[in-house]
Image (cartoon, rainbow, N blue to C red):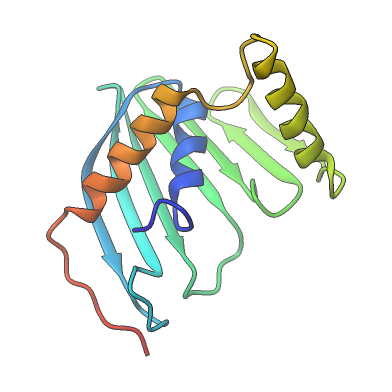
Amino acid sequence: MTGDNLGSHLIDLMLWLSGLEASLIGAALASQRFAVETEDTAALLLALGGQGIGIVETSAASASPGSRVEIYGSAGWIRADDTFTGAATLQTSAAGEATFPAPAALAPYAALVADFVRAVRGHRGVGATGEEGAANVAIVEAACAQPVRRRSGA
């Protein structure tokens, strides 16, 4: 699983939504379609703070109805759909459903630049911290170290 293009943003989203520390329980990685040096498909099972289970599945090789992050815990569950493709839907076991409109094309980049400027000026950014980024990389590296079967691309 390459941290730069397959799954790392979904891991970030899961960590942000749950607010919990995560550790990898298991992973399956494969090159199912493309003849690439890395994987084009990944599935991760994560323990979230000893309280929940997180599942990340992602593929550049398969058709998909859209992105989805699901988190299950003893107090309930949360599911985020289409978080990377436009208007998103957030559902929880406690509060029902909320829908978010797709941002304007450049809005995410303008917000990113504004956050960078705030950080340069010494204010806490709204994005991931260095520690959160390191936690993400640790999960990706642990997934890559898993002994799994990999099928070569077509």
